[in-house]
Length: 188
Ligand code: ZN
Image (cartoon, rainbow, N blue to C red; front, side):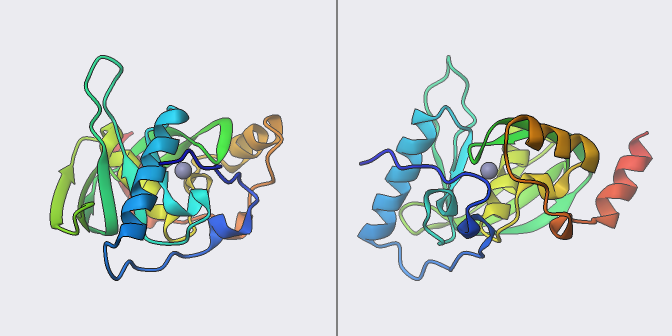
């Protein structure tokens, strides 16, 4: 299929909520292929449809390492149905070239979605693995939420954005998750 242009932070559509998929049509299959082609071309771990300018609820993830065979995972109309525990995750995003910052995430998640064939599945990712964190990161994109909204330290994140000449942090978008905060304090 095609390697698409990845939208950079500052593009308004990255902040827009995405629409549900009603049918896993040819158009959606093409979109899935474009997402995978683009993600692999950019050496990404995940990519969500809004990042290539399509505001529909689809994302892809591949957490396989260099010496493992590719393992593309496709999530259509995903829904996180369980979450627990908390961890600090150092994350980046293809829409934020080179910028990494620490964010708060759940340690364990359970997600329900349709695969590329329109078949429903449930997946569990535990212990704050890359998969567990990537699911939360990509799922957020479908609601116009970005990883910086979960940052541990606002000032550190602002510095990182400045360093890589990205737009400022949108303070109104910062997410205050008491549950995560409490869990993280417990771990101290
Ligand atoms: Zn991202």
